[in-house]
Amino acid sequence: MQFRILGPLEVMSGDRALSLGGFKQRAVLGLLLLRPNQVVATSELLG
Image (tube, rainbow, N blue to C red; front, top):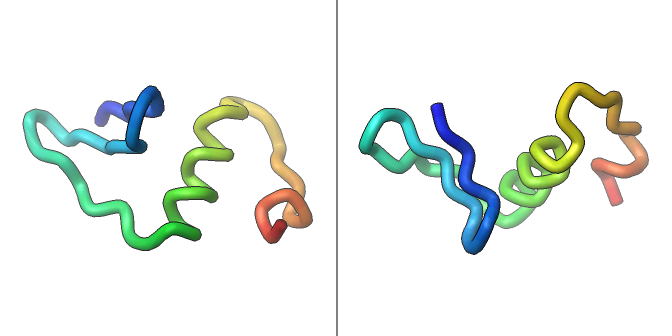
């Protein structure tokens, strides 16, 4: 699985792009990807 965060957020499985859902799901995934191996507070995820 490959996560592409430069430009539009994309997740690739092999040569296939996966659906990421709506804006909120993309925002949460983007935040978590920018903070690998770190605890992210619920308050940061909510807003």
